[in-house]
Image: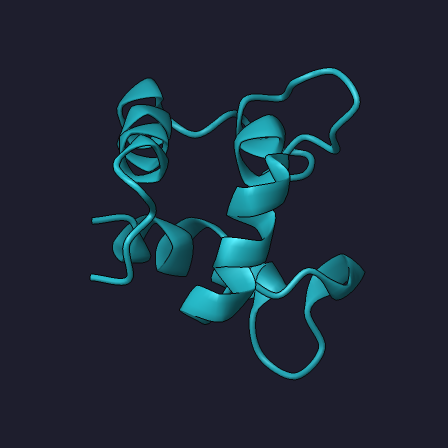
Length: 79
């Protein structure tokens, strides 16, 4: 389940009424846009061409990145 990861690691900046950079990640609909574009995976993997997130911080632990990637590979269901 990726919701706890997003809530803890992303939504302090990317949630609420004024999300950082206009990137809102506190609803499934919002997250699914970034899943479909590939930018969620690109940013958390610090991939070239993407703004690494968390900004100014360390990469998420490999187990959390894998959990997000596995969720996406399984269809990124709203469950």
